[in-house]
Amino acid sequence: MVAEVLRPLLPSDAELPAGAWLEVNGPTVGSASGSSIEVEVRMVRPADHGVLARRGLTGLANCDDAARAAAVIAATWATRYRLSPSPPLSAPEVWTGPAGEGLVSSREPTKTRPTTLVWSVDAGVGVVGTSGGGGSASFATAGVSARRLSARWAYRVSLSGYAERTIPLGPGQVAWRRLTAAPGVVRAWGSPSVFLETELDLVCGGVFLSGRGFTQTSHSVALDVGGAPQIRVGARFAAVPMVVWIGGGALLWARQQQVRVEGVSMQGSLPRIDLTVGGGLAWQFTKSRPSRAPAE
Image 1: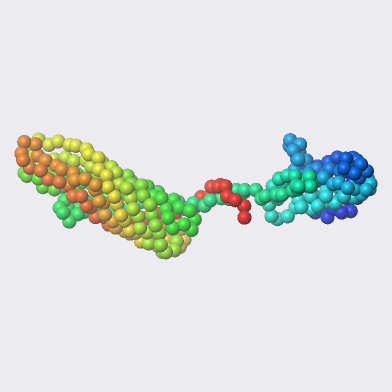
Image 2 (image 1 turned 45 degrees about the horizontal axis):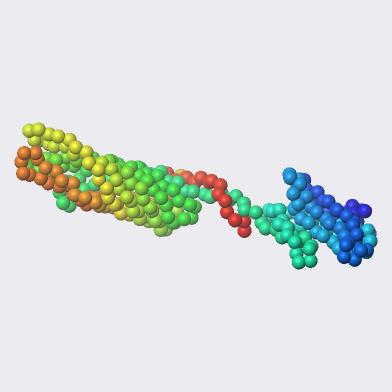
């Protein structure tokens, strides 16, 4: 009887969730009136026979009324789950209202959205020097940075090697060179085509010292840490995902590196502030990864 009444009520595109089915329990005689008909309509989940929705109908005069009421409820549920371009609703929550009726509420599920990251692999060369003595030397650097698409902040990690410099000390010289690693944060202004970047790094690495021109020479390695503010300007090639950049910065060392000549009361120190200028190329590419985000 319910199927006969339900068929003309259904729209052509109506359907239940995949694999779900309807159950009609009853009719039974209600205990309150002793003569009214009670019917319970349920939509059952296929995987574990869990109830997706439940509606109780009371006070019905006869079986025909019960069949018509059950068919209307079933048609309403089928219309709700009709196919559409928007994502389907998740399984409804079922709770019991004040009158004992099954009330249905639904919430949209979370959905997976890709997060697009812009990666940049860069390499460059330049000159490092200081006004406090020690001359200048060349350096080479390479780094990797990542940021979200359209974001202004990025994270960068770089490795740098600084060629040998010397300072005079008594009858000879002290030579030193550095190898450093630097994690940092980058803030960008401008557009992808032409941009300005500022960067602040935490620099740590080794300083390698050796003597020159002494009767006996020795070598030593020390750990050095410091900070490195930098600024870069760049422009992207139109045809390829390559960026050309030039920039400058400073290396601010946290402690004074003392050097001395054994047996003679002579000592000196390495510069605590180094200035750098250089340029290079960067290759940029994008890559997406899934992430969980609430549905809109």
